[in-house]
Length: 304
Image 1 (cartoon, one colour):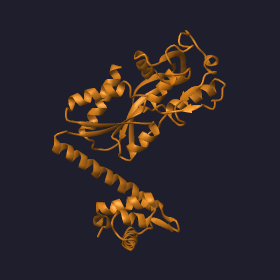
Image 2 (cartoon, one colour; image 1 turned 60 degrees about the vertical axis):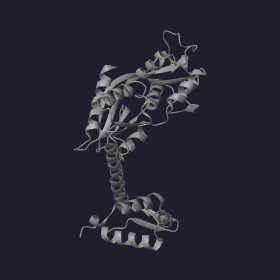
Image 3 (cartoon, helix red, strand yellow; image 1 turned 180 degrees about the vertical axis):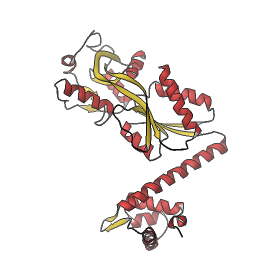
Image 4 (cartoon, helix red, strand yellow; image 1 turned 120 degrees about the vertical axis):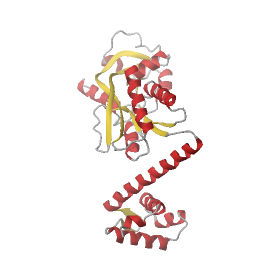
């Protein structure tokens, strides 16, 4: 008999726990079973698979490549079953579909709210869970099926085979400061003007940070040892408003914040444009609500 037919969800949960903790006794206690019983089950599973799933060490278990492959599949199955439970619960309560959307600060202030208003208007009973974070973390969650759609800066991002991405628009990256900043009224600025101020920058590896570092390098300057790295838009705005520090942002985001009187856009652009887009898993069958959310994001981008 095919060994996969004997696996139950409880077995997948045990496997995931072992992979994450590397601890037989802890997993056994959490599952209300005995360590010998768990060891016996794991040995039988490895015999069925025909390959070792773990290396045994004094400090615990370490997954083999076979184990990591099975772990990834088990995690996806458990995630999908949890989503099924949530969707069925939503259907019973009459609240409709549930969509998980990840967004970076590059798209959160204007594009995403506009798209969500349109989406919720079409799906009065829908539930949306919105998570803001850096693109690297969001795309990882998307691959793990913890998100349905991710919106943010793509720039030179090359999607993995499991994902599809679509550019919604391209825009400049600009410098911002507090209203009333000494440089706010200048008609034109260059790097010499802004170099002496402290900067708030996004974490290393983020698309917008990479653009800034590249612009500095091309301009003959080495990126400085930035005093503050932050991916929190709210904290960044408050820091700018109470100091003469500078930061960068997508042109549409900065213009939106400037329209609210929160920041001032300075007359200095980072060379080259950045792309804002959306990513989703490349699957033959997708939830209708997720498809409509993609459509609302396209419409929202076209309206900006």
